[in-house]
Image (cartoon, rainbow, N blue to C red; front, side, top):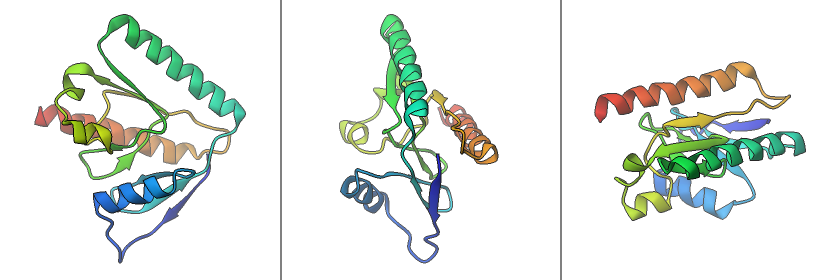
Amino acid sequence: MSFLTLNLDTVKLSDEQFYKICQNNRELQFERNTKGELIIMSPVGGESGNREADLIIDLGNWNRQTGLGYTFSSSTIFKLPNGSDRSPDAAWIRKERWETLTVEQRRKFSPIAPDFVIELRSATENLKILRSKIEEYYRCRDIIRVVN
């Protein structure tokens, strides 16, 4: 997956403004890092999309069998405790944590770090960038453990 990063040094998007940009441009996939930079990601190809779908199906089937939580697709953006907005290829959150969120928080970009994430590496994706993103999820889970 390739992407374009826009440096918005002089413009600080509020959470609502970021949400509106995403809603008004649904054909694009956005993330936002801790620096406030807007990341525009390209769609994936057939092979990557198929691998992603298989993993989401497996995660969803496991969750249906256990009933322990909720499964999310790559279209879901999570507002992480470190201030970034991320959308992993697949995610899972424990039921008791998800149900502490208000209805409004569940409808928009939920302010919660997933308990489990899957990030697939496409043939064109930079491993260093992907590792950095995975480390970010891990650090956010540490933040959650301290806060909870």
